[in-house]
Length: 181
Length: 163
Figure 1 (cartoon, rainbow over the protein chains, first blue to last red):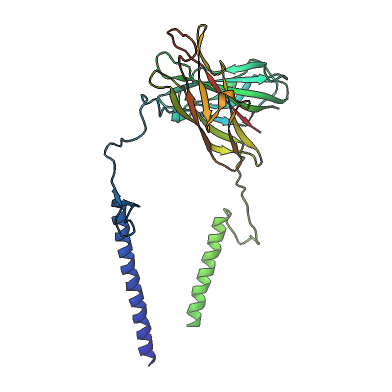
Figure 2 (cartoon, helix red, strand yellow):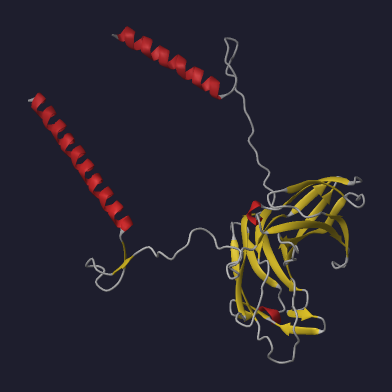
């Protein structure tokens, strides 16, 4: 009796397992089929009708080229809230990066400015040359040493097109807290 | 049977102690008495971001309305602070060539930004990783005064402020 009951339980388990496998295979096949055939909702969509969507053969690969002014790629600039440099020293470690996203499009130049009390007049502490995309400036020499303190500063980023004329583009001012200690 | 089971349990127990000691990075010897070691994993996350600004806007007779976008991404801010992007025009929204000029306008969310007192075009609060805004530039070109041939230009400055 016990052996019969065990056999019955085993059989039930086997049936459940097989049912699961079959249901899984059927669902997977349906998913693969639906991937190839997209149906937009429309009249009669519930009954299996609607408009069948197909891939547009006119769609092009990748990003727009440089001649497409409407979709022109902007200038990518990395910023930070604060920067720390040593007091009473001209040498300083920084991180002025031209991101790789600007490849073949824009050089960047960096200018470090500190502002006076009125918020308008500023003094330029450092100006870089053209930085190529994917490259960064890590060490700079300031025009003068600074006393310890926190200064209102701006990293002025001026992009240039990577053409023969090196045309100026719009620019960015990244306001930062310059911590000198 | 019980003996065999005991031996298996003993072997498993010994192996588990070895695994724990290896994970702690310190070998446990016969002199060890409940010793443990710790490492500290840390990352000092200063406020950083990436901003993508429109490089230029070039109008022509056939193109008097141009759309651009400004985007902020990879934003990491101190809790409670916000990032603002402000926009200023070198020539007060006039393209200039010599003494001549051509007016243009910037519409943001159907508002004429060039006549607005507030120069902020985008604010992204801490907790959001990104933000963007569509900028619609428009000009009437030769509508209200005579102009001469030339390359009329203006320069926009996007100022990023964190407060």
